[in-house]
Amino acid sequence: MSTSRPELPAPGEGIVKPSVAAIAVSSLLLAACAGSDERIIDSSGSKPGWVNSDRDAWTENEKNYFRSMVDRQLKLDLAMDRARMLSFRKINENVYTKVLSAFGETTQGVSNDIDNPSAGQEGGFIKRELALISKSVTLQGVTQEASYWEKVRTITRAGEDVVAYKAYSLVSIPARNLVQAQKAATQAGLTKLNSQLNQEAKESATKALDSLKQELE
Image (cartoon, rainbow, N blue to C red; front, top):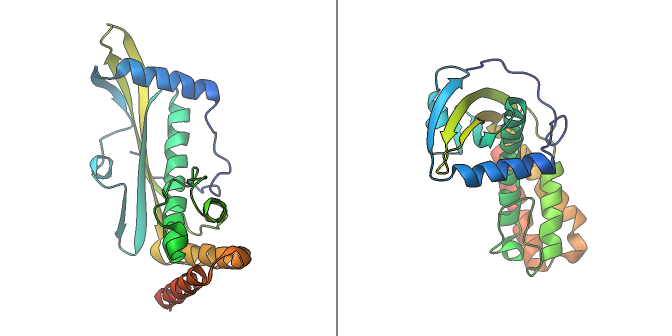
């Protein structure tokens, strides 16, 4: 397991995004390997406990941790980049979920998928704007705590021998910094969308802001 903590780029920057072709190949691998036997033939080291955790996010020692995993990737560097990218996404989705709740009835029943904020539902414009704000908010102090990978050989039901990679990423952000990001996104949403919000949503967001400010005191 790697214990180094390289300096990370801002969310969405400096990360190799998978091409359409790479995604298509991975999808084919996923379909081919469904229900097949797998065997680990190489790895980055002993499997750490966080890899087997049944939680994708938790708080510990005043830090928020976010875990992600990708599998059936043909290239190791692509697998590691995608796992790390998903970890960042989970932090932004945490912010998005908090912002959605801050605006109360305006966002009732919406998915927390930050890349598909239920366009077409009532209030779809506001939800899309809140998603964009949540994705662009500055995240201070994000650290890649650890990473882990496995090289897996799979014999498919059709008898094919497929070798691919599985990668895990664990990132953290200080709990206070996460609250600051939630506060900044809520304030930005309230300012940008003020003319589109009803009074109930404005009051709900203002109350949520006061609560977040108290957490930071």
